[in-house]
Image (cartoon, rainbow, N blue to C red; front, side, top):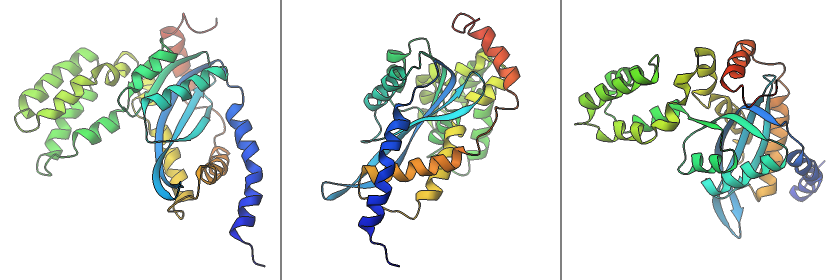
Amino acid sequence: MEVSDSLVSRITDKILPVVKEWHQRPLESIYAVVFMDAIHYHVRSEGRIVKKAVYIAIGINMDGIKEVLGMYVGENESAKYWLSILNGLKNRGVEDILITCIDGPTGFPEAISAVYPKTEVQQCIIHQLRNSTKYVSYKDIKTLMSDLKKVYGAVDEETALYELENFAAKWDVKYPKISASWRAHWAELSTYFKYPQSVRTLIYTTNAIENFNRQLRKVTKSKAVFPNDDSLLKMLYLAQMDITRKWTGRRRDWGEIHSQLEIFFADRLPQ
C-alpha cells in the first residue's frame, strides 16, 4: 500500500486542534520551579530554509510533579518572545513562580521580572561553565576548571566571591573575559547560594529541560528540514506525549525541598 506525503499530512493535521487545546489548557496557580530553554530547528518559510527556535517551559508544581507547560515555535531566541510566553502562562492561571532556571540569554531576567516581579532567577551554572571555557587552551583547562569549581561549589556567596577574586588574580592576565562574565551575571548565577543542598541541586542547572530536549532530538534527528511550523509542532507534541508518559510521581527528595520552600517563601504560599 502506497501512502503519499500529502495524505500523511492531512491525517496528522487532525492533531493540530488537540495541540492548540493543550497549549490553552489551564495551569496551576503556583509553580515551585519553571525551567526555560530553547531548541533550534530548520524550517521552510516563504521558499527558503530558516532556523527557528522552539521555546520550551517545564514546570515543577508544589506537589513535586513535573510537566511541560508549553512548546512554542518562534523566530530566533529573544527576550521579547519569552515575554509573550510568560504573559501566556499568566493568562492560563499561573499567578506565581518561585524560581525560574534559565540558560542566560540577554534580557531574559528583565522579561521574567516584568511578568513575575517576585520570581527569583537562577542562571544555569553548566551553561556558564561551557561559555567560560570555550576558548581555554587544553593545557590550562583542568587547572582552570578546578579553580572555577571553588567559586560555584562554595558553601556560601561570600566565600564564592572571595574565590572569584582569587580566580581573577590568577587567570585575568591570560583569560580576562571569564571573571568579567561571572561578575556581569553574578546576580542570576548566585541565587542558589542561599538555599540548602537539596534545593541547590534542583535549580543550579537546566538539566531537567536539557534531558527533555535531548529526547526530542532523538525523535526529530531524521528530519533535517521541516516543511512548516505546524509540521514541526505536530512532531514535537507527539514526542512529548511519549516522553512525559514516564514522568510519574514526584521527586524522591521533594519532602525536604518543599519544607525548605515553605520557609523561604512563607509569604507567597497558602497556609
